Image (cartoon, rainbow, N blue to C red):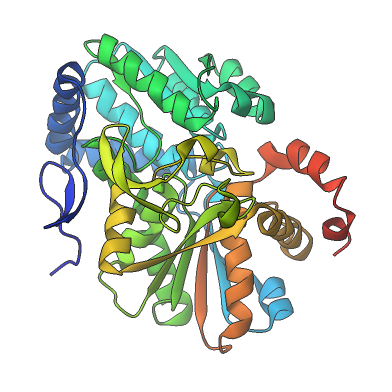
Length: 403
C-alpha cells in the first residue's frame, strides 16, 4: 500500500496533519471543479495519453539522459553522482512536461485563452511555447522584480507571442504573480484556462502537476536500474513550489531504501529571515487557496533563484515532511553560486540557479558517503537564463570565480 494518503478532493494526510484542499471564493471554486472533472476524465484516456506521449517524444525530446557525472564524482571522492538531464528538454527545463499535458487538457475543455504565472520565467517560456504550438492566446503574470532579473526569458515569452504582465504589488515576485493569475482566472474562467506551473495551489493543481511531472522519476528509476542494477540511495531536487522534486520523488515514494531530499533556498541565511524555506523554517498555514508549510514572514521571502522565491510549498511536500518520508534542507545563496560555477567548470554543464541548490547539497553529501552509494540529482533546468545575473554577482566575488 502506498505511503501517500490523498483524498479525491486533493487533501493529503489525515487527522491534524492535513495539507492541500481548496480554500477559495465560490467563483473560483466553480472554475476549479471544471478543471478537476476534466482532469479526472482525460488523465487515463488512451487517446489523451497517446497524444501526450507523442509530444513528449517528438517535441520535448524525451526521454532525456541519466548522466553519470564522472568528473564531479571523482573530484568529491565519495558517492556516484548521476544527473537527470531535464535541462536538455525543449525550452531548457522540466516545466514543458507539465505545460504539454495541461494545454492538451485545455484544448479538450474548449479554452479560448491561456493564463499562467512565472518566477524564473521557465514556466512562462514553456507555457508561451505550447500556446504558440496550439495557437491559443496567452497572458503570463510575472513579478516586476523577476522581470528585471530574468529579462531574457521575458523577451522569449514575448517572441513566442504571449503577453507578459508585471505584478507590481508586495515584493513583486512569484507570490504576487500567482495572486494576479488567480484573480484573472476567477473573473474569466468561462473561456480561460489557468496553466499553473508548480505543484501548488488549490485542488486539482498539485495532483495534476505531479501526474505530468512524474515522467522524470519513472525514467530515472528505469535508467538507474539499467545502469546500476539497483535503486539509488538518494534522490535530490531543489524545492520552491516543488514540481521538479515531486516529479522525481513520487515514483520512488514507496521504495523505502531510497532517501528523498528536497533542497530549499536558504537565501541570506535562515537566521536572517530572508530565505524561502518554509519546510525548514515555517509552519502550516493557508496560502493561495491551499494548506501547506508557509514562512513565518512571507514579506521576507528571498532567493537568488527567482523560480524558488515562494513563501509556501506544495502540499505533497508538506505531507512528506509531516510523515518523515522526505528530508528537507536549506542551501544559502552563496552555496548555490559556488555549485553553479563548480558544475560548469567540472562537467561542462551550466545549471539553472534553481538546480544549483540541489547540486550544492549533493556536493556536501557525496564526500560523506561510501563510493558504492548512488545519488541522483534532478538537474531541473539549464543556466542560460541566469548567466547575466550570475556574471554581475560573481564580479564581486572573486573567491568563487577562482575556486
